[in-house]
Image (cartoon, rainbow, N blue to C red; front, side, top):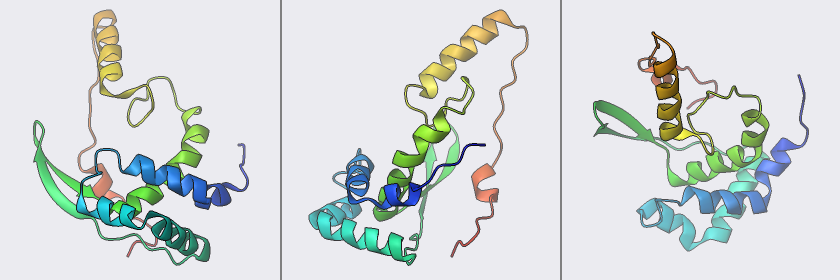
Length: 149
């Protein structure tokens, strides 16, 4: 197993946090939480960086709501500030993990997604008599997180 050094310093670097804030605002620019954060962007990022480095950062409460697409699903949305931290983390670790995934992993990957998965499914469905399609019911709510408040 390969190890990587200095990842936390890369995650908490101001340039990475700035990039993360830009990526987190995609599709959220006019939402109140995003607007408040961006009003004092530099100060917010410096405070976030300080909390991360000092180990005092705490994830905020999720906002839960339901969507019907096509079935009713519970969505838990993180506060905008936490979305910035999520993007900062992903900016650094995604390239490291992505190259270890098998080709047919489609969720949350660049140049993959739903359309690529459907195309691949169609390819297999035409070639093989049986195809397994499954979804693990309520998987994420079942995960017990260490250190969660």
